[in-house]
Amino acid sequence: MLKVLALCGVIVLVSARTVHAEWHFTPMAGFTAFGNTSLFDAELGTSKRHSHFGGGVALLGSGIFGAEVLSIWTPGFFERDDALVDLTDSSRVISAMANVVVTTPRRWTEYGLRPFVSGGFGLMHAQTKAAEDVLLINVNTGGYNIGGGVVGFLSQRTGVRFDIRYHSTLNRMSDEDADVPSIGPVHLRYVTFSLGLVFRR
Image (cartoon, rainbow, N blue to C red; front, side):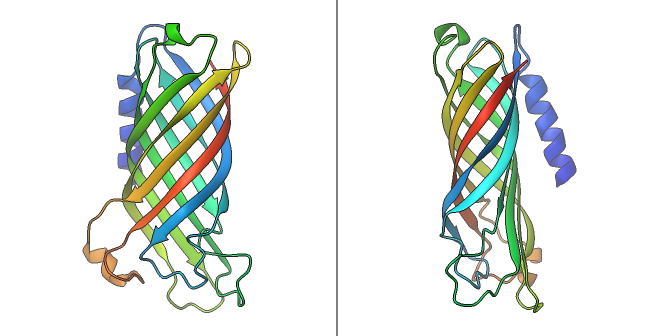
C-alpha cells in the first residue's frame, strides 16, 4: 500500500508540471475534530478535539490545476484528558494522501489570497497501545480526503495556508477486518483544521 501511495504521489505531481510551475513546501499544525469510528474506542476520545501536525508538498502551475501530497498525524486520537481511567497508553491516526488541486489562475491572485479545493486517495493508519494487550488497534486501510482553503503570500517566497479537510476510510469490508476490534465494517472519519507556513520555490 505504501509503495502504491508513493507511486500515485509521483504520478500526480509529474502530471501537474506546467510552464512556470511552482513548488509549495508547507509544514502545518492545527486540530482534528468531529471524529467518528466503528473501531474499539475504550476512552470514547474519538469525538474530542486533538492537536495534529503534518505537511504537504504541492506543485501548482499558472493555470487552475495542480497536485499535492499531504500527510497529517494526530497523536492521542483515541484518548481524552478527562477520562476517569486511563485505558489507553498512547494512540495515533495518520493519513497520507495524493491529491488533485483546483485553484484560481495565478495571474488573478498574484498579490492576494489564492483559494483552492483538493481531494484524492491514499492510506489511513490507526493505532492504540495499552498496558493490557486487549482489543488493541493496528489498522492500515485505504482512504480519501476532500477539502479546501486559501494561500496568501507575505513575500515572494513565504506565505501562509489555511486548510479545512474531511478524511474518511473507504467503505469496504475485507477479510483482514475480521481480526480488527470493530462494530461492523471498519470506518474512521474526521475533519482537520490546519494552518501552515508556505515556502515557495
